[in-house]
Length: 291
Length: 292
Image (cartoon, each protein chain N blue to C red):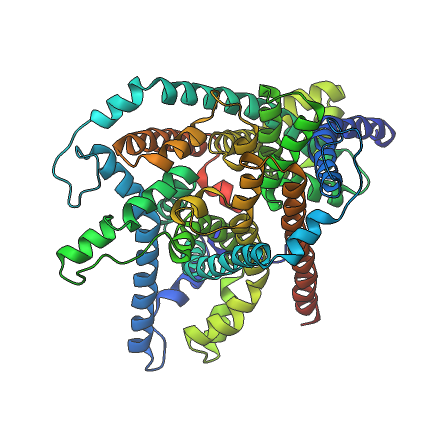
């Protein structure tokens, strides 16, 4: 029998081929083409004499406008990640520790419901909440707290609020898995040894959930810097981010080469993040093995 | 793997008592205060999460074309406007078509890839898993841009298969992840037992492996459907004018109009999402998803 199982195992390996083909043709090849397009003077299909050039990258590097766009994108991503972590952690902790099955199911529904509602719909919801005549301003005015509407959207604050709402479920689900796997008895041991619940959390639970914090933060940051709908609608076309700029270069200017170069910048930021994350995860888990 | 979540061991009554019993020393008041703060913070977060959905529903039923708070009445006129709109109905049908094709492709491809990874003794399987999950980490707008540029270079226009291919790429990681999770918790001895009892490898596959993997595949399929139905960044580059998906149509409408039609469209998609959540709960159970 052991001899007979070997060929079966090998034939199952063939099942990877269709996906491998899809990834080769529709993922790696297009990204490779994007890299090539970013260093060409034009479209090689329609232009006979195309040369290799660094002009697209030079344009990004030499113009403070484009550097500002990149920085705005990263800044919005960082604030979104930080806020999502601060909002997501307590909820994830609650979900991981709640004893009642019904309570857990209800919390999970509350987290999944917005996630399943759709990005455009949720951005629209925030527009009705945050606009000058929106619910928040109408409520505050009728309560007599303000006389002039607060500027809650068409700025980075509005974008960040919308993005946090959209991506916090990803943070919660990532963190819940990690916190749930931390043995609760470790916290109890710390408390029995005289630590306050807060100190037990800070010195036991929080460090052990670091891999989840890293994973969730990376995911939220990666999603936030590539968002298009929320920054354009809640920013009211006032704030330019990298994805908005990329789409504008395609739709308004049809400048494929420059869009490709901007795409490569976004790709580089994302890849750097993944590498940094893997490195940090290695450090975090290495530390734990030493302890 | 060394520690199981205590939640999965309900008979551990001792751990339950320790958390709920008041502390032995005189620390009860601050502890209660901390507990209240913890609950208050979490309830605020839940309000933040759910308020926009509530607002959309209120807005959809609001008779006025602008947001009025508190609402002055209830009307279904926006639902009527949504359902008689040829643009919205066409977009809804097209979205369902794309999502159905994507679900089929992503489920078949992702489930077979997961089987190959878990059972095929493939060399470098960790790298393969990382590759299959990479569309999750890579900005989806790049997938859209890269595919768009390729289609322009190949001069194929904006075909349906091109859009479905893009959606399938971003949906595959979900299927791979849920199927792999089931395969990892799966007792290989069940397959061996079937074979020892004389079943052929093919019969073992169809009568033992496949039924046991089904919940993971089903969960993956449902997620693939949701991801495709709500997909924006990939579609942005790949839809043909006049043949747009619902999120794109909603987005274009939102740029110029902010009336209750969007609210009605939103409520319809929220209802659709809830049906999907219930389906997910019925097929695999919500709890099992989070443990994946």
